[in-house]
Amino acid sequence: MLTVRAPATSANLGSGFDVFGVALDRPADVVRVETADEISIEVTGVGSQYIPEDPDKNTVGAVAEALDAPARIEIDKGVRPASGLGSSAASAAAAAVGLNELYDRGHSREELVPIAAKGEAVVSGDAHDDNVAPSIMGGFTIATDDGVTKVDADIPLVACLPDIVVSTRDARRVVPESARVDQLVETVGWAATLTTGMHRDDPDLVGEGMNDTVVTPARAELIDGYSQVRDAALDAGATGVTISGAGPTVIAACEDGDRRAVGTAMIDQFNAVGVEARVYQTEIGDGATLF
Ligand code: HSE
Image 1 (cartoon, helix red, strand yellow):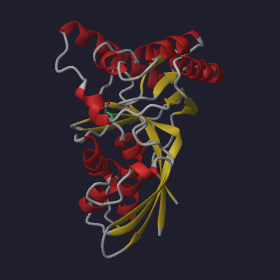
Image 2 (image 1 turned 90 degrees about the vertical axis):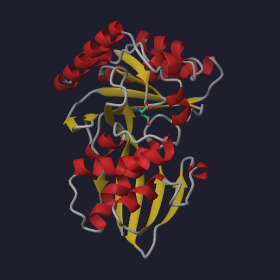
Image 3 (image 1 turned 180 degrees about the horizontal axis):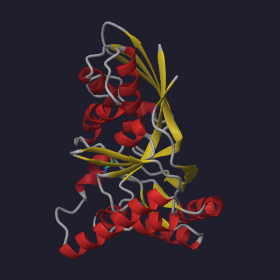
């Protein structure tokens, strides 16, 4: 039996919709795999009651199919489903890394990204790599149709998860079908600024690059208190704030010493609109780890 820990991730980062992602130091899913005649899945942990164990409906079932790797698969969820923290991607990433090793398939980490993304498609209806790439490879990743570029970056982050459920399918439905050229121009500027900030480990540049006037404002409507939480985090020292993935988690970049104040401000504002929330004081971390 092999055990793999794969981290939560935060996709988009504002200006990088469906392209940018970061591995978070915590939380994480832990997946155990052992050879078997057919695929079976058992799910425990946070939100496990909402996750189907039928291999045709579970994200890791599609991964096992793609790798032609029948196995008994145990998933211990540390990443809450429908949180915006790449919950299904973490399970898919862990399964891809574990089954690749168990069956000696010989795929590189980058080659495992589109395989794990097949699992994502099962739950979101759309195969995108921006969560599975950092969960498999770690760091800050730029995932495009041409492959994945990874940057090892050190940026303090605060992820605030409110007690609200937003499904990825719903959050993708509200994405505008088109954007204006002036929005394209500003998005290119922010994405370039964010990428430079990752290379320089500079929270100010990363925070500036977390802006977005296209997708985030449409999705903010799905998250009670989003604008108050964003304003409070910025007042408490965050250098940038946006929706993590499809939401409802709100993610902030900041200087190391400001994490606690930023986290407290975010929780207080969610509480002020009657929503319970929890905070992960985290940072950019490693990809899936085999034990
Ligand atoms: N980029 C995706 C989205 C991540 O924002 O919809 C969620 O799977």
